Amino acid sequence: MMDLPFLPPDDMPPVEVTLFDELLHRHLEQVSRNRFYELCDSTQQALLSLTQWYVETISGTMTLVILCHDMDSYPQIVETLPQFLERLKLLSNNSKICIQRPTDRGIVWRFEVEELSTEG
Image (cartoon, rainbow, N blue to C red; front, side, top):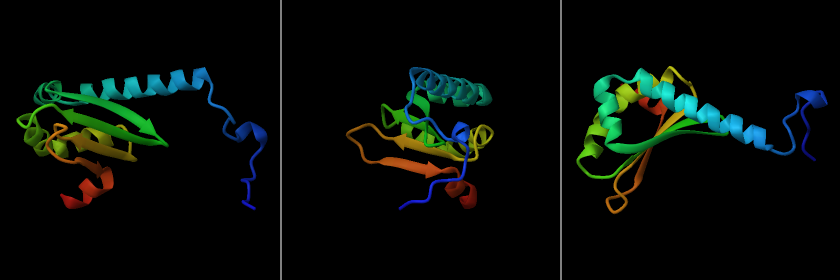
């Protein structure tokens, strides 16, 4: 039998996710997206405008998802990863970046903040 954490009932997570919880989660993602965009310089913002991108949070991990629609924007996005990483680190230490090439051109690349931090 699994040991349950010794926490008072008020400190335990809710059994069910409510509509209010969902709304708060969506609001957090929208605020995170807006803040990330504001932290980017005008060149990075222009580059993001060539793609579809969003910020999502799953199990406490903030993920920047970038979907490239053509192969022209893809190498520019990959080249700008270190700058995007620096902006993302200002928002969360537990982050990932997911870059997807055009659907007919290959696999999705996923990078975690720690992976990129140790490379440079």
